[in-house]
Length: 353
Length: 207
Image (cartoon, rainbow over all chains, first blue to last red; front, side, top):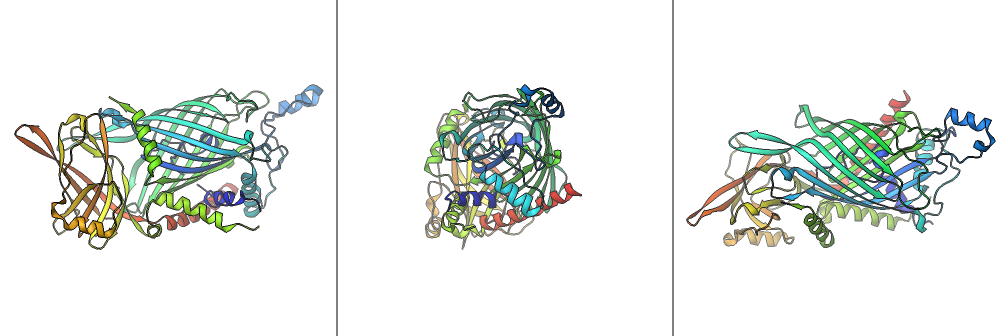
């Protein structure tokens, strides 16, 4: 019996759908995950899995174009060229994130928040293939499985299959003012932010502007509707390691994300259901050097201390490349001694006058 | 496919306990205390650090932790004067007096009852100098048994030294409500909802 199977099973059970605005999972925003800044303070832990497939179920290869195939047919040299993305991969991350306000005596700077995320994982397609082919394609929908030729890390327990990423984000929440008996300041839901992620799959940096959890006129004790939207512009670099995960990546990208949240039974037992749509200008490039645009949709559940989210490129009508993913995160409500020490250290780093 | 149940169950239990951070009994039924909104006061010496915390309901009292920030650099001396919880406007009854302590350690029911019976146990402290200081307050409210969903108000009164002759009292008022929490139940409901929504998404995309 493979000892890794229980881990995969838990990931599957908990990852059927996993989250609205959440920890900055590496790569997840490029897979369509809702990536609004998280306003919650404290620690969160989580799991993320992302599937990158070379083929779709009709054996079309990700990144190949009609023009490229026609050129290959004419030119025998091109016919032997390596396809843009010759490997199928599964990214499986465990993440720990911490966010808080900048420690400042200035009231205005108290609206500035930071969030750091450390992720460790394995590159292994075992769980993602199982989920895609056995559960979704075969079990639920009875459609052809997605084939695999070359899979990165058939044996994931070796050094080259370890993945890690460190991410940081600083964002500023604009301020609302209230003038009643005295002046009060509240953090608003509009934000502007900047972030970076350094890891084995990708190096990136971005700026973002948007709004999240913005209440609408539908706000009652039992049902509330909120909206969110964000635009993010970023730049990418290949990590300075041999054997990069992706042969070619676009130097820059932008993504536009928008969605709705329904809040049920807010005062008694709060359940938040969310649905987001993402347009991504493309992290990957085709054999003609053009960015491959993607459309994603996501569903998320925010319940109690848990967050579930599933994202898929179904909206774009494709089933290859960055095809699907899921996240499951939970709040660590009572950090132990080690995490408390980490918290003290991080807060000390983020002190401002 | 044979699943080794012990490691799978251990991993799931670890996640639940990490998320729950408290006794296994509250895996199924507990209380969550949620503040009405994030506060940042311009001149008050204290503001809320965490919007959502968990509460503990027991016979004769209700307790919860509340991490707050003190803007210690703005006031030389600040001492806690009094804490109480008042029910929503219009509801009958006096405010419930609360004992406020630093949340250095978990207390069991007996210890809390002993603290509540000690009328001289009112906490007095002064924040130190140098930047904001976070303090985890543990608040124990006597004879307070809030129903889920009702909006109540926690009042924390502090005294700020204004000069050699006296103190000025400032009150931090925090509207909040108590709601249900239960990690095991929530995971089950969450997974069920995700399954339904995933099916709905496929149905929409196919039709």
